[in-house]
View 1 (cartoon, rainbow, N blue to C red):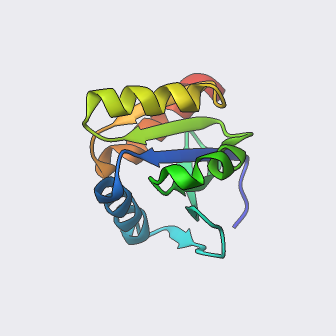
View 2: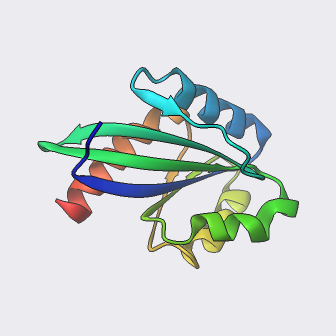
Length: 129
């Protein structure tokens, strides 16, 4: 499938529960092609959406919530366009946002997986089209 624009999305779940929820949500999405290769500390998938007549492809990096992968994951996040944090513990989420904003210009917070695609669509529309 061809696309007009490519965006790297970095998702950082608060804990293993949110990691599983976001991964399950993405795997269930009907247009998703999931590529789970040998990438330590992360899962990777691609998704293409139509936004305002543009075919937009997302590279989605879901970082495993474990401190021992932190340094490696910073490398995965480099060059990303949008960071997404999913969680509900305010202190933990603030700490995670602080870590991601050192690498990414834009970081958004969601509390449930179902918010992901709407947040991405709005962010892309506002900042790129």
